Length: 108
Image (tube, rainbow, N blue to C red; front, side, top):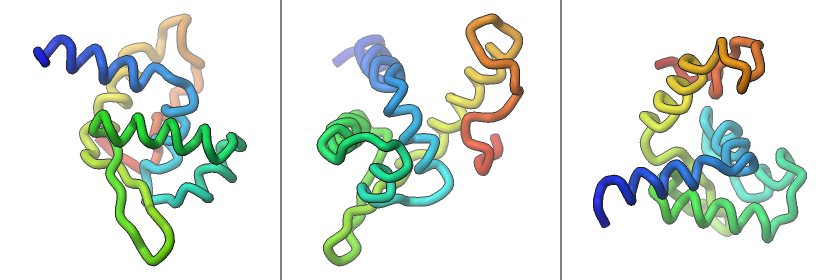
């Protein structure tokens, strides 16, 4: 797969509102599927679907602790990139003007 195709796949992965919400929720610490379901108020199958896509595309990783699987951000540089987009578009009409960062616990 060439570099442009890889970049397109990452942008497609990040273009989903629910996936961005999950990344934002996970950004400060690892989370279980149950925690993500509770936070997002989405069904467990839908959360699992989105988590699979995020993991397949290299954004999340997992670790097992007993019967639970915990998800975490594979490389925190993705949060830098998302925060950079927030910064670039903070004064545009396509973003809320709150000035908040995507992941307040993550400093660029």
